[in-house]
Image (cartoon, rainbow over all chains, first blue to last red; front, side, top):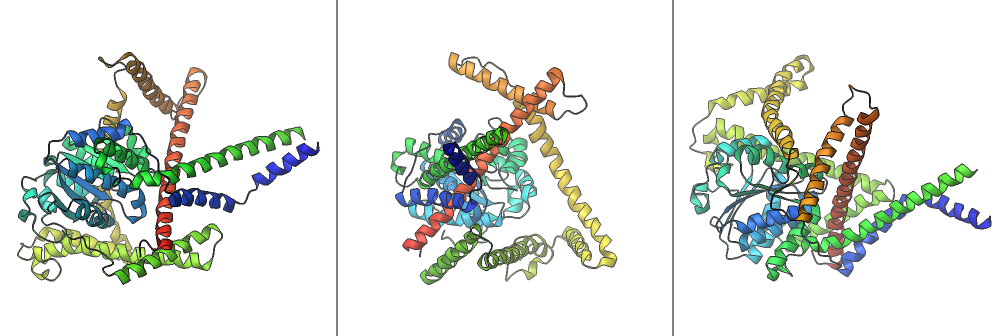
Length: 292
Length: 235
């Protein structure tokens, strides 16, 4: 009887646990793996593998449009996707066209140029291997216009230089001139609009990479309306894994998402533990109430 | 191409990193309880965001899409590529509609702004209607009507494929039945609706799981920033 009463007290206390203890546990679950540099490799799922294979199978020199439709607030999820994909595209010798439907996206693509392209691919030339077209207002209306007349909206690059001066802009008249569009997004306008306003009406291969919150909304488009898809940080980590499998020289460089997946695993374990504890507490409390 | 670094000098970068770190801690302090530091950071964020978006809208929408079309020869200082272009008179229409929108500020003639709003809503509805119908309705139905068996697949893949297609088709039909309210949910119809609820619950669960992953990813990003700040790696 005394034992039972002790148990009840314990579960009662657990049921009214101050939520700040949970916050602390989650914080520790993230901080400790970061300090310990705990990483984990996530095997590639078919969704991600198909996007990887599509990029892999394109002939060198193919034109890939990357749209940065996110901002710094979701960069921890989206930027590793951009990094891994750009490495792959350049490794295959593709030409990369950077643009943004979000004004903050232009800044993120400049970060890609600063921290990745200029550092890891200094031999790639601006205007011949990659170009930054910058941000344009218009949301899905912009995509609509680009589908019929790309140069009507983009007459200059981000720095105001006429696009006629860049060799890689030769032959770009509409979105149909691109071999692949990759929409990296975290909301509206984003990957969904690329599927709706470019991929479907233009029959252009569209791949996507979105924050995990957006991912469930995009899954229905796979595989018929999207060639492949990176869902959240896990998607980025899977793409890194595929890249490392195909090109082991990226083992050290392409680890940004994989590094962040360590804390992800431990934090999820803590959350699952709290869910189980919460349910046990609920069941014990309910059975106690029934008894008395 | 050289990137346009926001913080161009090491000192400016260090100051930026310290401000970022303190603002992050101020926001996190709300997890303990509401306090003036959190309030300050919150108000600062709202104010800066409003100013940022207003500035962005002016320089990326009004200047290139309106003023540069109507007065290209006056754009030398801000948009040199527009100088020499011909004036496009049709842009008077959006200018007028934009000005009409501002009549909301004067209550006596505020009703005028409805014309501009009607144009905006009409344009958005017209543009989106066909695309949503095609991509989110017709194509989604096509994606659901898939063959159960794909010739050439191995036995294991074929069984897995058939099961997967049945789950998709059955799940969609049951979820639609749940939202069909013209017939009472009884008997076989009621059971199908019940399965529809399970399908919806599974979808909500997956959505919640992804949301948790997204939030932890963002937390990891901020923690990583703070760890680098403490160690001096990003100064």
